[in-house]
Image (cartoon, rainbow, N blue to C red; front, side, top):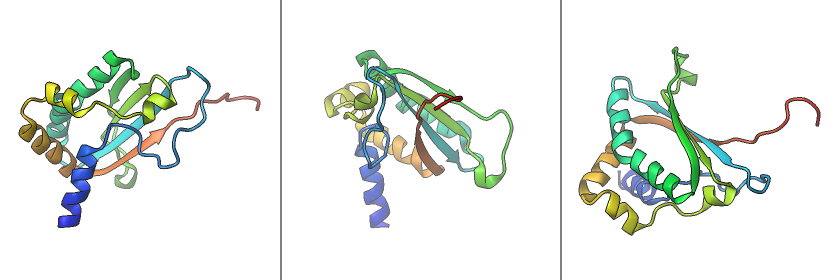
Length: 149
């Protein structure tokens, strides 16, 4: 239980950047670096998860867009259902300015405090958002030509 609490504390304290240990993938200079963040939510909790994302994650994405760190972001839901092993409920797609911006630290503590003055509520709600997630994975995308080499 202590290990789980420690891991959760690290996740909540980490900057909002792709979790790829190898570092940024090569990209053309000035090319946006796109990452898809997938979430599988416990049955019956999708609307609660989405409400928490809108309350606590959307302001961070908007601040990162205003700062120029990200170019755009969007949220997608599958139109139809899939088998349980391949099911995902939400995908948040973030286009960072470039690979360096994707791996740079996100908002600092002062900026987060300004966005969320009630830090106790913010931490509790973020903890809850990840408690109802069954699976989460990040997919940095590489764009390339379909034909040719």
